[in-house]
Image 1 (cartoon, rainbow, N blue to C red):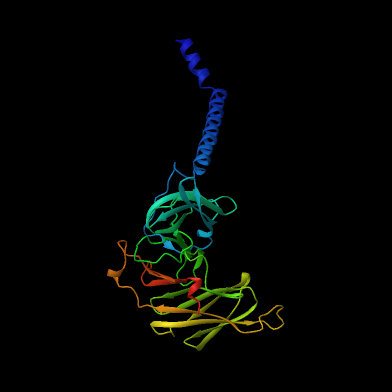
Image 2 (image 1 turned 90 degrees about the vertical axis):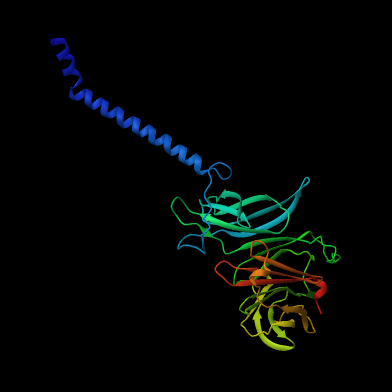
Length: 329
């Protein structure tokens, strides 16, 4: 009896309790380190493994202090027998970018510490409408990029003339209320006269119009509709210019002309007026029954121009017109 009582007393001594407490603390610290390592490894999974869930109600735009995904470089190339699309851009460092095609998930990737992301996709048959959603972290709302990438293949319909096409598809980046960027034109270029080009006309369903082009000579661009001046705009960085017209143009067939006014003292400025004119068909808004099966996209193919017409999230719609170099008048 004394032996048992003596052992019990020794196991309950303050030194024993203190040693047990130290071992418990050490074990807890080791477990915390292991869990931290597991979390770090899972955070590095960019494709395949851990996947975020696409939120169909994702907000468009950005939360305060969060940089949404944007598209910076896009290129199409052939890898063996497979046609591929390489996309890269900027976004909030450490976040996850999920790419979708017409609402269907394609790929996800993690943004690096420099705020850069990139993916390579197989090109699918038919039109591709690529959008990006950004996920900052668990419990944070997803943010849909305002930009959309369209890849629209040259039609194989025998009734549509294909002699003017020099590439396999149109690739462009658009955003509501902003000028579209043509990455690859099926016509191989835009209407051009000397240093001046007129590449794209965007318009929304309320009648607002954005006319876009480039100039290798500094100065200003004067815009005409049916030979009447409607306004002027400057030439920005990189020679890109765009003119925003309010709801001033009538629906129907119009001639749109851009005229270059070189800056005073410009070296090698053209001695004669330089202008580019295109025939612009200002169409009425789409009806719901005129869109395709997804209710979002309609393309008007004409020999010298394409019109990409689509409805927008939240209502309304937008059209983008691209022109063949042969459309210049």
